[in-house]
Structure formats: structure tokens, C-alpha cells
Length: 198
Image (cartoon, rainbow, N blue to C red):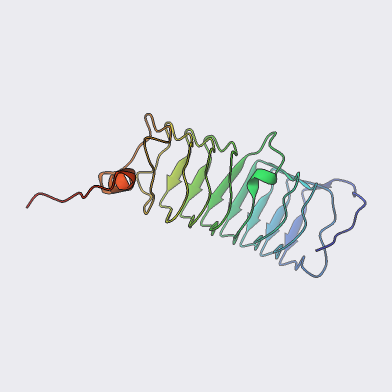
């Protein structure tokens, strides 16, 4: 999707409510302390945009392009965010929080997600390869098919999450927290069977 090429003046403390940006394109600019409620940004070209301390609630951002996009202090609540490539974002100052979001098929390859909070979110087939997830919290998240390869999970908290498969031999998991019910997800790579005592 094309968008206006000329960057606009910074947009501050604005509220965008139920805007369909697939038809009326969002202007290239810096958005500071803005709120997006029920907006459709699916397939949007957000190349070069800057979002600082913004909140997105019940928005659709699936398949948006994030080349050089700045995302600092953002909160996403109840958002649909399929197939986003967060490694394309500007890495400096990247700070995100996800609550009740659908993030399936997203990629966080080599992204610094230190202390990031994922709550009640669907993270199916997400790529966390080589990501820094130190101190991250996965609270009641579905991680079916998610890839953890050479990832840093030190002090991460996955006690309430499920369906993950994490190989302790290829990931750094020192002092990470898991529940007893999640132990099989740490042993899948070793092809062993675990049974409860009769």
C-alpha cells in the first residue's frame, strides 16, 4: 500500500477512533502519546514512521510493513498482529507490551525483547530465534510452534504459558521459571517419554 511521501508535523496527544487506514492512509509522521482505538492498519506501509508512548486497542495491524519503524513505549491490547516482522523496526529504544493479542506468524529474529510482557496472547509459530528475552514474562500465552533457537531466556517467566518447546541445549535458560506441567516442553528435543508414576 502506498502512502504520502512527505513527512508531516509531529502528531501529539491525538485519538484515532475506528479509522480505516486501508482506505484513508495514515500520514507519515511522528506520533507521540497517541491512542488508536479499533483502527485498521492491516497491510499498511509504516516504513519510517515513529510511534512514541502510544496505545493501540482492538486494532488490526496484520502484515503491516515495519521497515525502520520506531516503536518506543508502545502498548498493544486486544490487537490482531499476524505476520509482522519486528526485526525490521528501528532497534534503538524498541519497547513493547502485548495484552490479549494475536501475534501468530510474527518474527522477532534477533530482537531485543528484554523484560517484555506478553499477557494472554496467542504466539503460534512465532520466531524468537536469537532474540534477547531475558526477564521477559509470558503470562498465560499459547506458544504452539514458536521457535526458540540460540535465544536468551535467562530469568524469563513462562510458568503460566503452554505448548512451548524449548531446547535447553541450544538456548540460554539460566534462572528462567517454568511450571512442572511445562517440563515436557523442555525435553521434546531429547525424544524421551515422561510418565507419571502409577
